[in-house]
Amino acid sequence: MKTILFLFLIFSFSICFNIAFSQKSKKAESGQSELKYTVNDEWKKEMSGVYEGNIEVAFADGGNTAFGKICIDLLNDSPSVSIDGVLIPDFNLTKNNIKNNTWYIYSLIEIHYEKSSNTCISSFDDAYGMNDGNNIKYVWNKTGDPDMAKTEIEKLKSEDKIFSLFWERFVFAFMNNDFKEISSVVTYPIVDSCTKEVINNEIELEIKLRNILKSETMDNLGKEPDKMRIVDHYAKKLGGRFYYQKNGSIFFDVVEGKVKLKNFHCLFG
Image (tube, rainbow, N blue to C red):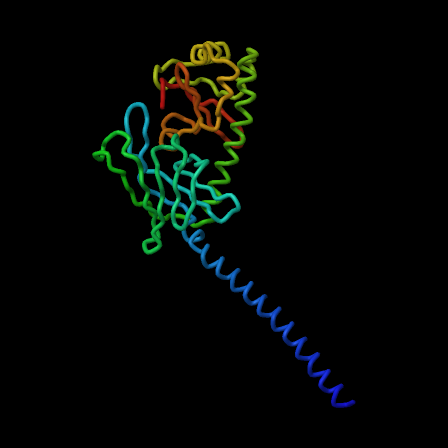
């Protein structure tokens, strides 16, 4: 009887040990899997950051090369990239590589991260044949860490949201002849940087806006406000990160969390 009881205890212990070992092995495998995933994604942390270098900007007056700032934040659930103050809304992300799917964001084709030099190689389409039809490549040097990139991108996203909400109010005010509302976002005088015309008050502002936006409808004005962006080097020259163009251009900027109408110019873009 004692022998049978002893064998039963050994058998029970063996089963418990095997179950515990099996569970431990599964946890270990799970931990290895999680560790492997973390290691594989390490490149996102390495690639994230602020870069500076040349960009190719294609406008109606031809191609321009400009020095700009690029921010890459791949550490969030929604990876984000901005190039010279403009958020790229659609791109494919693979290891060390970003492919731009948005044709109207410059002529940027892709960004490739080089770990050895901690730089990014940017590739632009030779839209104006300046490079015999071959893609134009530039090296962007890292000048800021992932936190700096995240801060800059969050700022751009906030300003984009502020402007989108403002634009809805602007369109409504314009269509309802409420130029007092529009005038509230203006600091007079405004000098048209193209014609040198001076706008001193609400009445002159109404005339100017009607000349630029004549024949526009509510639907036309409301279409795709997310595309009304300009690059930083033009923003510094013309006074705003946002613009609307019809029979001339209107430039806006976000100043201390509020939109301001900053400038008028000739046809642009």
